[in-house]
Image (cartoon, rainbow, N blue to C red; front, side, top):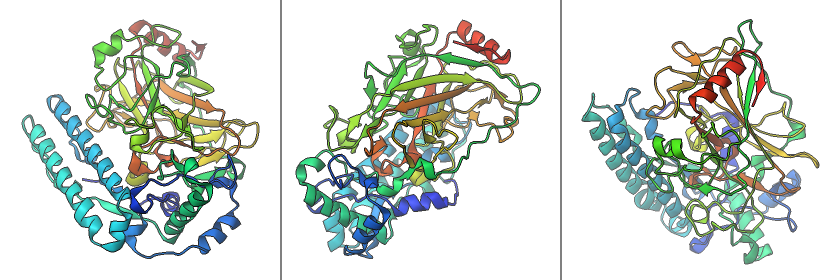
Length: 488
């Protein structure tokens, strides 16, 4: 069944600020309005935005105010002990389900005029066909599992989707974006996708209170650190695949990833491919793969993937930014020694669909250099001059001791509690802490790539890791961490 979650107040505010989707006639809308050349949405004062919104016509038609499509996460309904022999077919159907959501969102983004004329259009032309497609895939998932173990029950309840609607602010934002594109001309907006980010997705980091708390180290803490240097993706390895979530499916992520480490990673890579793959890591004993959604500057300029899957075809546009710095550190536990990670352990941190799923699995962490005691979950930071944008991923540090993956790619690993202790039945492993720094131009609007229907929200940020350390180097890492040393 779908998790029952109450959406946080912060998430509700994000929903209320969702971007406009479409222009009449099906043309895609600019992501941002520019008050002046090079100045993004957050260059406008709050008073200017309020006056502009109040001056625009508003509508109460919920279908027109819909900003995205909200679907239950089918993977959450899978049995925890799903047989490995069913996993390939199940993963394929889950990827097809994601494809259908993307297709439906694209239809939504092209249907403003039809919805204006016919309030039932969204149900008849978008939601009901999507439900039928999802129900068919769910049926195939149930059949695949039923061949090897007890048939899962109730998964059909995960088929229906809804339109996630904005309040008046959302519609006013649509009209404001329309006016801004008219003022700036079509040239600047041609590369913009029209599905985020918006002004309220940003906050000045100086207005955020320090909020980082670390658990107190206990007597048996493992206090060392092991660092691996795998570069900054200077060789520009990108693809929109996700070999963990959608193995064997091209464009399984519908957004572009940066890759460092293993260079064999694509949709079709298996463990043997990864074991043989070249690595950008300085220590050749680390053939692990580290990947995350690219960050783009949205200034009206396109990158080379504007006509490709994962790029412009999936409404991810703007110039991809090569990180200025990437650090990959493995840290210990504040309460115990750590044990080695198994080779080919797969870990996903964060939730690429957190805008619609809710923040239960969100693990985004945004900040600025010089202000990293202040971390943001559902906002992008506005950094003062001389400070740079920072993304930090702290991966799960507890492992169930048996599995290198799980049906939903989450339940085989876990986060420690606030005191640093692993759940019962889990053991502490080295915690990957991934820090990515960007030199974002002053006042530039930026966003991470996302599934189209996730509207480039910062809360959807996530990172992926597959452990391909050789045994000797993994043992060295564990010894280093457990003895309190700093190693590379």
